Image: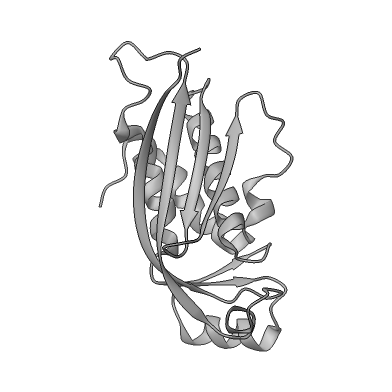
Length: 179
């Protein structure tokens, strides 16, 4: 059976600490990456315009990725001293409920995309989110309408980021995110 797939790529410069990582450099230091974020939509059929979806339908995903651009991502289990210091001295700090690995960022992106498309009434797609942290390291998360979602976006991200993202759910985003 034939599938069609479209992919859109976004970029961010993001820092994090990956506690419990094998590498001491990652486990004990704030460090950053030039991330590339891919979102792919697959379908067995094309819409009336001959597309899987219009790329314009993905503008909210760009807004999601932009939240990570020039941000520091910390795990909620980080020490309170570090979280407080970073929040007091920096403007773009994201606290994730899970360790801020490429895998967990991909899971958050795929769930955000599914939630957003569901909210717009767009269904019947397989969604794949990929996060490239380095030239050799890439993580993917996939979900389809047939999957039982066993977590929600707020399972991945803290309430702070969920509240920040909620501003993208207003009618401006549903009509199209502006620069």
